[in-house]
Picture 1 (cartoon, rainbow, N blue to C red):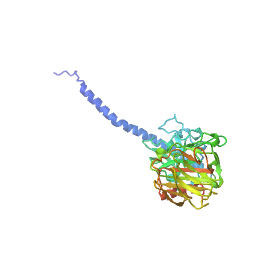
Picture 2: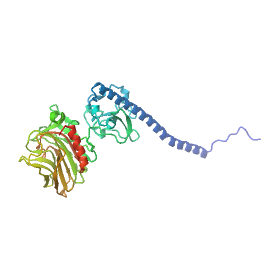
Picture 3: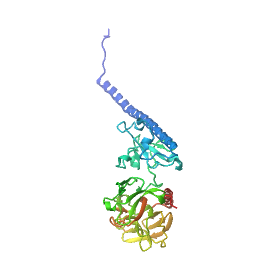
Length: 400
């Protein structure tokens, strides 16, 4: 008769098999649980930004359709403090979002396509050391592009919110961004003292090639509004020694080609050096005191320039000055009008280095006038892109 009280236990092999099965199931299920948790966080984050953009729209309705400014946005919208906490960051970050500087203080009616105008996004301000600029998006560096499963959540001016890998540029950026090496505008990232003397002009591109000036006597002056530049701010250079200098552009300028745009308002009709590369006589726009207008990429010791008729350039009025250079040719533009093509080769030894904004030679400023915006590209733009950027700048500064 069998012993009914006897029991057979698990063998070691059976126990190991069970443990292995549990481990396999855990390995399969844990990522599922993690994705589920992240999906829940994304849902909460989407809800948060939907409430924020709705509050921004309500603010605009109460203020003649004008969106909040960068200095007051987070007080203006009056949302609960929990709404601005991104669940993926947690409460250690009281505000996990940035407000797009390009939308700030703009009229909703001025947006031709509100579905593509960013209002807020996942981000922590990194492009400015100024504490007043925190949670304001000036460059794509301020966006947290991988916070939510390698994407970020963005709200738009029409009120919709989406997860995306191709967020709009936070600032009021030129329509052509591929190949952008430097972008400075007087409305953003200007470091100045109590007398508005400018020690740094922050690069809004992704390359952080900000222009600086440590010598107080050579610092230009920030002007908050210039009437014939559509009331926009600009930097005033005195024509004596004012200049701002960038780091080396060598890593971003490898094909012996480039395009530059400068929004300029002169204060007299003498000599100007708007952009000048200090390495082997680089690229510059020049008007000499003898009345001739020279626009050229000065390649090494051989100048490759155009010579429009005397006084053809409207130096008594605001203008968008542009130039495009390929390895073998150069063309200048004034307010979108081509100034002829000049051919010539770059010297083999030429490598672009440090740039002076409004200077000739090392900190020897030759510019007398206001510069509102500078955009440099590390490639020769095509005619279509040149027109896009030129039209964008002319419209922004009401230049005819």
